[in-house]
Image (cartoon, rainbow, N blue to C red; front, side):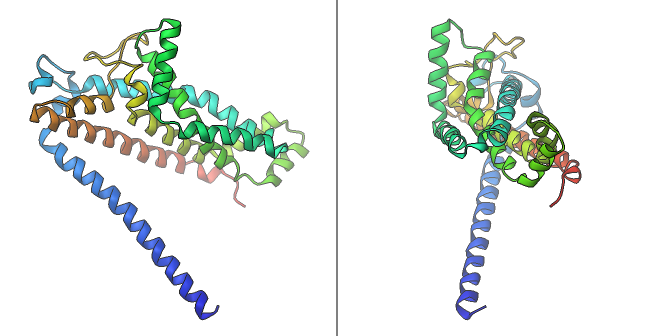
Length: 285
């Protein structure tokens, strides 16, 4: 290795260290700044009670309605998206890869859909609701958010499926397996940790987005008991609380943001522990 190559390698390594520290420091700063302001307003009552009379004027109550609504919405949207995204990602890699141009066109359109702002999906969902006569409801929010996160989930799974060696696919086909059997018995098992990561990424976008549900899910102080009822979500609760002229209510917005962060962190930790159990079953090359 020449002296110039060593200098270039050292500069690249320093830049990587700086970038890593910057991202890690930014994450820590966000967590500390939000949680620090959330602690004074946080109380067990916030987690176990819905808003009471005068909650938005600084009186008693909690955000249980928003917590439950967010979980219902994100789980429903993620589940619906998974039913569509997994077969589509497998189809792109096992069938369309025979014609790379077709696969690239599909990926291009998915990337375009990924880049569309979530508020556009909200407006689209609202327009469809008016067209079919649907009211703001949990079901409308689930459908809208599903359309919003499907491109994210498909492209994340697509990148994972690309890592499956071509030789493994050819071996399965040569042994008499159909492409469908290869997809669900080999690809899914081989890429299961990556699939969980794609689901987690989509779930995080679903539970943290406000624009796509602003016009479709509505908002209520009650916990929904059916898909046809409106539902509150944590992002909208944060938005409405921060818009309040009362300082105590604005402090509760940070507590709501802290709850949202904690939920995502818990899901991330559980998913990492869960996928770790399946890594030993993947084929190593």
